[in-house]
Image (cartoon, rainbow over the protein chains, first blue to last red):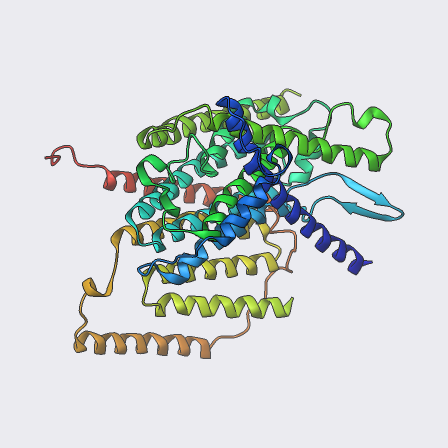
Length: 344
Length: 167
């Protein structure tokens, strides 16, 4: 039976990989549609109905383009850059609980690859390694715009990681656990963490924008100043990997946001509806993805609404705005938790 | 498990050697990253998940990124490397050789150390680690945090420009 479960885990791992890639693929399509909607255009509508085959056409175009590695580039690192970006983006999906548990006969199938004791910290570790992909790629290009882009990326990500970590600490004070599955289980009914941690949620959300290099924090690629930033010298599928990794990051960070603050696969009234457990699991996963898509839509909404920050504004918001706010949030949360235990 | 241990140990030693041997400073940093990841793997084998992840976050994710940052900005290349005369090379060889001799000598007299307490598999998990840190070792823990704060204040002071010599 051990081997059977192992086989299931491997199968599930590939399923998650494929779903992540599929969602990221259609996120590029959705981004263009949302942008078109906001700017009163039609968006892609030639390839297939509603332009649904557009991502495939884009992928094919990327693959067919000429592959150029500049003569002055550090060859090995130049190739490693996009690979690291892609790998770290995909690795986080391992700890996210995508749903409850299916029970078939005496076997139970958990819709999570690994329920780590330290789930949140694992997510955080992958985010902090992700910066290497951008930094190495930018440096190895041997181009001043690429170098500037990668330096901006590194300083931005380190600055915002700090506030992100502090907002997670406040969340952990409330939940008393670092395991993502337990955090989701605690949020059944209306006990979503956003109601207990509104300030922490806002801080986490802003940091998630900064960590995924999305507008208004897309300074590392900033076309108007850095003509593409860290990926200026990249072409063909290596550029494709960088752009695609950004969409994967957006999907995964939406999943993390939903898991931490919006109840994950829990839905109010679903537990008491009297449906069979397997059906509830299935519906829960469907609701999970629905919530993720709403958060992804929010990401796109912000991108096409707000202008980009200036570099000094970015640093001021990070260090003088978010970090003190996050510390204040920890103080408030800590004292509330302490005194509610004390007077009980 | 034993196979994993030997694999990780080999990776750790090999990459640690490459850190020293690599001619390219960025290459050194990347090998150091790999070495730290292998050590994090060792922590996981000991069921110390928290330590492993914190090791990755702090060392790989923060400190080495700053290393890389500085090295990228310094733009080191062989032309502006300080010249080593034969004399300095000879002195370095002797000093290194003596250090090696001391290490070998200390290993000769070493004996197998047995753990005073039986190994507790749960000790590396966050809940137990937190309890040990904040109950049994609270004072040393707080003292080390004071040390960190003084180091931070020192760094800020060094980084700050002196108002008198501003011009």
